[in-house]
Amino acid sequence: MVSVPRLVIAAPASGSGKTTVATGLMAAFAERGLDVSPHKVGPDYIDPGYHALAVSSSPARSGRAPRPGRNLDAFLCGPERIAPLFLHGADGSDLAVVEGVMGLYDGAAGQGELASTAHVAKLLRAPVVLVVDASSQSRSVAALVHGFASWDPEVRVAGVILNKVGSDRHEELLREALDGSGVPVFGALRRVRAVRAPSRHLGLVPVAERRAEAVESVAALAERVRAGCDLEGLLALARSAPPLPDQPWCPERETASARGGAGPAPGGARPVVAPGGARPVMAPGGARPVVALAGGAAFTFSYAEQAELLTAAGAEVVPFDPLREERLPPGTAGLVIGGGFPEVYAPELSANGPLRAEVAGLAAAGAPIAAECAGLLYLARSLDGEPMCGVLPAEARMSERLTLGYREAVAVGDSPLAAAGTRVRGHEFHRTAVEPGAGPEPAWGLVRPERRAEGFVRGRVHASYLHVHWAAMPEAAVRFVGACAPPRSGSGGGGR
Image (cartoon, rainbow, N blue to C red; front, side, top):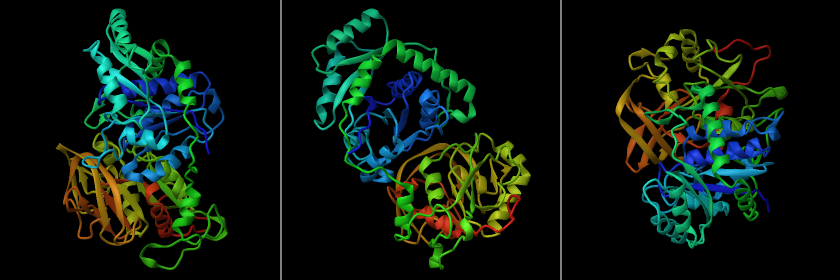
């Protein structure tokens, strides 16, 4: 049994102020010296960046690695992994704050409560604090809160924070209405325009693109929450959450299981299963193959567990920024390019010709490359007319159409990530298009909610719009590292 004080910050609908309150709470508690673990329900990559920034000021983290914002998505990872992933991320923390997604009871379309904030709150046995946009109501707020609190008896709606309150008199009316509801009010935030968080076609602008301004925004949110919320009461509520009976998720255990119980591979000789059933690759002498992980402002979308699984599978994961660095990390044997906004930085990415040539050379040499969404665009011939890496026979462009939603898919053939027939769950989120949408060897065959081929497998390159969470498929890390060439003694330089 593991005890972690925790709160889930939910709302009746999107736009009510969940991110404002959750991020402000994280920052306010961190400033008080608590080691705060930040989490986000759903597949969103952007909010966790703000969460990580919010908790970075904690004196409790002084001299220790920063806590990343982590996602809890019951569709992508399966309900059975939610509590273990939470405990893994919250290990050693004083408090965990979980920001919900959409409305409290909104989940995967057509699949009941699956992946909703309510579903995750039940899996975590966590008290829920409901953030209510009170801007256009007074006494009706009691009926709204009563409905949400009584809809599912297994969901413990244990408090309310009133957002966008117009005046002292407005707050008084709202509190009077809620007095008899049985759900205590833990705070009231006034309508203000002081906190600026710019958005564009896929939501908030990520922290990596506006760090200085983001620091100011998070500090302003913390100030609002300190002034308007009962922090002591919320902390007491978090501490009322019961212990969880689950074991924390462990990347070493997951990769060992994916190998068939061969044991963890922190170094030394490590048997791994190579793609296509090839014999195991043995990395001698404790050397680890270098896996380059694209980052920086253009490639901000990745789940923290991906790098942890690659490391547990035996790789040395080295981040790099394709906007700033002209060479791949020395000794690169594999490349992972996640999602982000390459369309915003197409001219700059194109201008970095030396790196584009290295990426193309790495692919030609047969090194494994895994590319999701933004990575797919970067590997194409061009993006909005700007030359890209030319690894894939495809052209990419911005589109008027937003493609968004959960997907179920099957691996069409063998690749560095999955054996043919492997079923996965993923998420699409982009406003771009690639022509053609799939190669002669597609990455995936989508089976729900529509049937179509998607993405490219070309040599040892796997490129697709589909975002997957590797915690649900740890064998991907094992296969990918197994496809990397063992390090050569004295190897240096960037790509091939």
